[in-house]
Image (cartoon, rainbow, N blue to C red; front, side, top):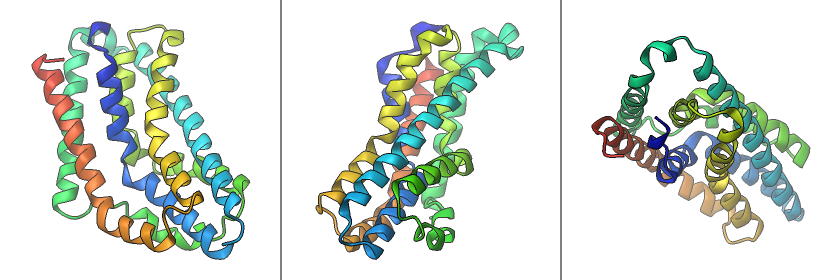
Length: 226
């Protein structure tokens, strides 16, 4: 089974997860709020963005290890292990179609972000950003965990210790856009207006990109191409 695990699959799933509009939207709103209320404390933006990203990274790593163990002890593996790979591929297809549907119906942008904007404006320190990252990872889990479930299902055929390099690499891909947003804001390469405009115009397309990657990967897995 594990021959089905390749670096390209891990990369594809990581990219599909990384362009999720929910987490990126929350991070963007938080950084914008910090710049608005503390324009002279630009370093706070850098430290807060890093704290948020680190929090998400390690909590997501915990989820990954938990899911791998769950798949390993699930009784269904004893009966359907030969079918699991194709089942995971079918799951990826469903997730991909769901995301594309959200884009077509214009429901792709995470609805949670506008609802918590006022609370995000109260985040003024890296410590608060770290806590926010943890809370976002928990409460937005249904919005982000799909690709991770696919990956951990594949990884479940490895010993836990051997799954760590894959999970560490996957999570690095997952948080890479968060690091990019943080650096852009800190370096002054993006203004508050730029972020707001870009977010309003393009967040929905992240859902389309994520869905397309998941759909293509799922079809390839089910058809036995990869």
